[in-house]
Image (cartoon, rainbow, N blue to C red; front, side, top):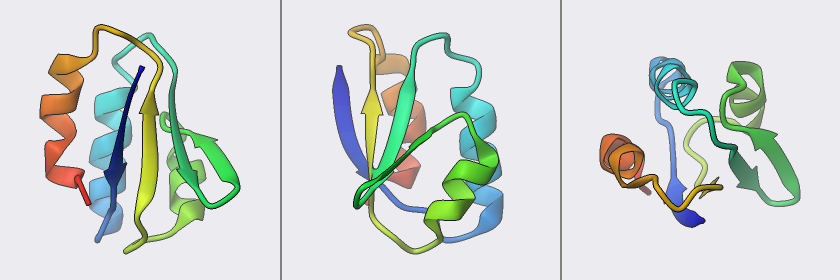
Length: 75
């Protein structure tokens, strides 16, 4: 399992992020405060809002490739 902090500044970034993580078969969660949503859910992440720091949790031990791809969203 791996964790990192992410943020989105534009709705287009959320769409790109969801399209990217949807290609992986392991669970990925995004949390802001007490609200946890599936990272593969476009509406779920949009509900968390823009310009907020969120916790991303990757439920896999083999996720280095994805971590490199999503570094541009790091907070």
